[in-house]
Amino acid sequence: MNKMYLIFLLFFAASYSMSLSSADSVTIYEDFVQCFKNVTTISDIDLSDVVLPRTSISFTPTLRAYIRNARFNTSSMPKPSIIIVPRVDSHVQAAVICAKTLNLQLKIRSGGHDYDGLSYVSAVTFLVLDLSNFRNITVDLNDGGGSAWVQTGATLGELYYRIWEKSEVHAFPAGVCPTVGVGGHVSGGGYGHMIRKFGLTIDHVVDATIVDANGQIHDRKSMEEDLFWAIRGGGGGSFGVVLAFKVKLVTVPKTVTVFRVDKSVDENALDMVYKWQFVAPRTDPGLFMRVLLSSPTQNKTSTVNTKLRALYLGKADDVVLKMAEEFPELGLKKEDCKEMTWIQSLLWWMNHVDVDKVKPEILLEREPDSAKFLKRKSDYVEKEMTKPELNRLFQKLATLDRTGLVLNPYGGSLNVTAVNATAFPHRHKLYKIQHSVTWPDAGPEAERLYIGNLRTTYNIMTPFVSKNPRSSYLNYRDIDIGVNDHGADGYRKGEIYGRKYFGENFDRLVRVKTAVDPDNFFRNEQSIPTLPPNRR
Ligand code: FDA
Image (tube, rainbow, N blue to C red; front, side, top):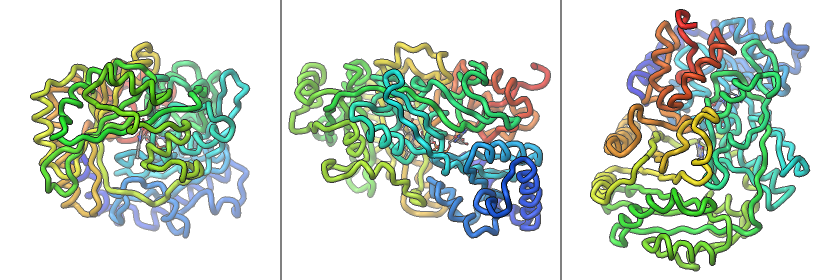
C-alpha cells in the first residue's frame, strides 16, 4: 500500500471511532433515510434491507461478502456509515441524490475485486452502494450476431453461463476470473484470453444505462457520445453509476484447444520466455499464450517456475503444427493439448484439470467472503528483453518469496484499433505484465515483506517497460502510483496517476468529467479530476 495512504488510513482508523461516533453514524442514517423516503415511494418495511445502518444485523455480512482483498478485511479499516443495497433503478437514483444532498462520498461496488479496495474503503466518511442485487442478464441470439444486456452487479461467470445456456458457439471476450464484477471490469477496459482475436471487452459494448450526478438515468442516446466514450475504459466511480451494459457477443468454434507447458530453468525456461516475446504477440490472433513466472513459495530451491498457459480457437493438430514452425523452443506435443468446448476452457483456466467432471454451474458461484491477502501492479513492455536482461530478472525473482510476473501478449486485434477509440490507451504494446503477490498470513509484518518483494521486481523492470509516463492498467488498481484527496490541487494530483492509466486520453476524460459532474460528486482516491476553475 502507498506509504502515505497507509499512514492516512491508519491514522483515520484510529481517530475514526472518535471522530465518527455511533451517534454521528446514526444521524447520517436518519438524515439519509428521510431523504431516501422523500425521493422514493419506499415504505419503512421495504427499507430495512435496502438501507443498512451499522446496527443492522446484515451490515457486516453484506460489507464482507464482496471484500475480495483480505488486507482490507480488518476491524481497524474504516467502515461505511451506511450500506445501500438497491433492488431497483430508483433506489440507485435516490442513493445518488441523497448522498449528494448530504455531501457524503458514495463508493460504488459491483464485484468488489478492486485490488486496492477503492470500492469499499475510504479515508473520509463514506457510504457504500452495493450492486450485488443488480445481476439480471438477458441474452438475445437473434439480435445481429447475438447480444446481451447485463446488469453491472452480475459476475463475468454469470454472464458466460447465461450465454452458454443458449449457445455453445457464442461467447464474450472478458476476464478469466468468474467472480469479477461486470461493473468495475467493463468500466476499466477488460480483457481475457480472447483479447488477441476480439480485442478488449469494451470493444464489444454497444449501449449502457447510467445514473448521472443529478440522479437522472441515461442510455447511450441521451448520455451523448463523449460520456459513452469515457465509461468504456475511463474507469468506474468517476462519471456515474452504470446500471447495465449492452454487449455484442462473438462466435467461437465448437472445439477449442488449451495447453500448458511448465519448464524449469534447467529445461531452458529462459530461452522459451525469450522467444515467447517474439512469437506470442505476433502469431495467429486466435492463439493466446500467457506466461507466469514465479518465485518458489517457500524460497527453498532458489529457482524460477515458468508456466505457459494457452487457449487456441481451433483444433489441437493445427496449433501443434503452428508451434513446431514458429516456436520450437516450446516443444509443444499433441499430448500437452486438450480439446474442449469454449465454456469448458473457462473451467480449465480456473485450474480444473479434468473439465469433464466439473459442471458449468460452478461459474455461478460467487464465493463470498473468500478473500486472500494480495497486491498487484502492472507494466507494459514495448521492446523485447534480451537474454542477459531476462537472466538478471530470473536470478532476482528466485530470491523473492511468493512474487510473480504474469506476461499477457498483445497484438492481433488490438493493433487495428486506434488508441483514442476508447478511453483505454495501451493497445499498441508488445505485452502487459501483472506483478503479483498473494500471501496467507495477516499482519503488518507479512504485508511489509511481501509488498516489499513486489516493489523490488517492479523496480527491476524499470528499464524494460514503458516510460514517460510508465503506463499502468486501471483494472490492476495500484495506489502506489498516486492518490487524490480532491483538494485544491486535485487536478495536478489526478494527472499523476491519470497519465499512467490513460495516456493522452486523460485530457478528454477530464473534459467529459468536468461537463457531466462539475461538482466532482463521483470521486475516489484515483478518479478522474475536474478541470481547475481557472481552466474551465
Ligand atoms: P469493484 O466493485 O471493486 O469495482 C472496481 C471499481 O469500479 C471501483 O472504483 C468501483 O467504484 C467502480 N465500479 C464498480 N461498479 C461500478 C458501476 N456499476 N458503476 C460505476 N462504477 C463502478 N481484469 C481483466 O481485465 N482481466 C482479467 O482476466 C482479470 N482477472 C482478475 C482476476 C482476479 C482474481 C481479480 C481480483 C481481478 C481480475 N481483474 C482482471 C481485474 C478486474 O477487472 C478489476 O479489479 C475490476 O475493476 C473488478 O471489477 P468489480 O466490479 O469486481 O470491482
